[in-house]
Image (cartoon, rainbow, N blue to C red; front, side):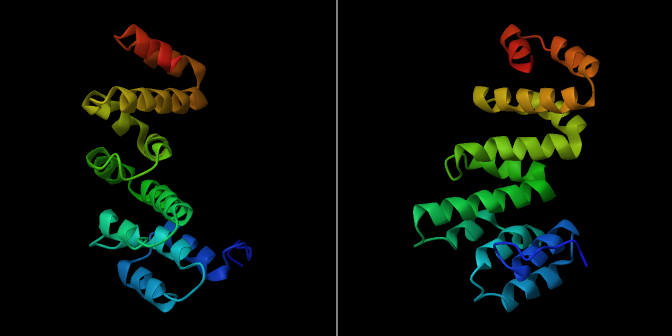
Length: 172
């Protein structure tokens, strides 16, 4: 067995998550979304698979939630961001930076955390492109936490290299 459990969303949704994690081809992902378009956990199927589409447009994907309750919209958006940032955090961050009011406050943290876990060097090199003070603070926290997991000395060395005192405090 694939290590799947028949969880709260059903086997079809869990398999969609498995397909997304294995970076399945867009044709298979599209067929899966279409085949289960009337499934009760359709949003849990769309969220992990839609970022695999070559024509993926997060704005259009989020628009599918029009008419839903705020809670449903929020859950769908959070799930989409989580899955997208696990697959392509840099693209997710670029889109979020251009559309900051579209997602919850937690989205920035989720994306940055995924980015630093996937490619901490690239994120560290991109730190100077963070112009929004809150985004920069979140990025420093994410980088510091990731480096701390790798070793305290490495994290301290990086934090001490920050020129700004407040940023060093944030990193600590």
